[in-house]
Length: 333
Picture 1 (cartoon, rainbow, N blue to C red):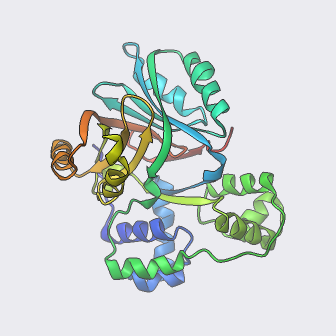
Picture 2: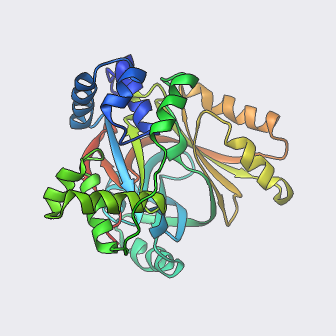
């Protein structure tokens, strides 16, 4: 596993931007403990190296989703994962060890579009031997809420105040413009309105008003990501769980308290919950499983898989070391 030199300042910057991705450096500086110029320079270095990045997306554009277990023909794992990553519906692609070769997260604008992808487009990818789809009934927790925990509780609250969404002047929606803004932000998540306006040949005021409206209506979310190998949580794993129907809601609430939790979904099929986590070591995979069964009676771990390599993460194509390549195909559907 590659050794990334993310120093304490880097981790504090990343943590702050997980909470307030577009927080002004001048306001973040007193909390993080460095001057605005230093923060900006360090963030630019992190972004340029692919060690950290910001993904921007419209969650309202995804009305249906599924987690898909893929098994590949011998020697085809990486080729299949790369082909999957090129399809915008596959917003996450992990190469895994265990009972499946790949775990893919699929998102689509409608149930009809989801079925079309799963039944007609996915089978066209060369090298797939079998695929088992688990439609998502409910997203219980997603990785936008995960934190690297480099800031203390007081510092976190200070940054949270900067992330408060303010109202915007009422204007008519322009979905095409919204998608263009998201596309620019997926190249630079902190691009100012002036830069976005210049890229789209529009006024900064229109960009600011549109972005404020998108954020206030829940049509624009941003997630600050970090290369896993340098995060302090270098191991990723998927757990496939069974839970009695009568206990599902209560267990879902308690799972949210796990500091390792990145995502948990209620799925339709042989598993009631599918959970993705980041861990500090391989040894913690079994420890967490034991912890779940002791603290959450009724939970049964049916299977688990360790992630060998993440190929795509919320639309961002990653290199072999898990760094952002700058290629993001979210919302291309």
